[in-house]
Image (cartoon, rainbow, N blue to C red; front, side, top):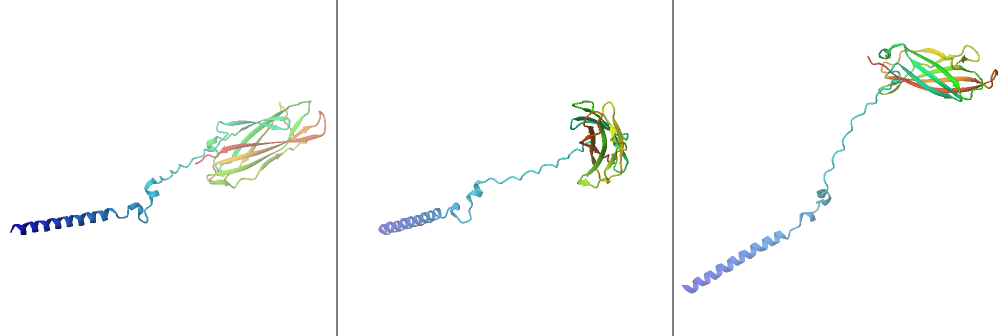
Length: 215
């Protein structure tokens, strides 16, 4: 019947509208859910901050061993009060033979001039050599100091053109030694006036570093 058909179509339209409204409500509810940045545990700083890069490790630096006798000799200028000293160091043993177990000769000579020279003389009364030995990991045991005490009074005459020369022998060192630093102390007696028997004492210090040849 025509009336019945129209009634059926109206019920179908109302059903479709109801279904569409229900679907729209479902979508709306889903869209109104909690945003990710509002959820517990979400760290906006971590999201915006780039990952930290690892600090690069610098390669270890190698410190070269000093050898002041690498050229065969060394000349040092020192000052002891008003006395200017010139000291020459050398060895008769080749540097490649300066091994830890060898006896190592060191020869040195010194002479001086007086700044305000009024005719006074000056003398070397004593020289002392104190060795210090170094290895790859730091200081090592060292030989005892070596000294030369003048056998004449007041000392050895060293006013230019005269000079003092001496050779000290360094004994065997620790097998792991890489260098030896020689500290010198020069004790000098200066006349207070020409032909006077009174003296003033002046002291000069010096250092010389020599590499130990490796086998």
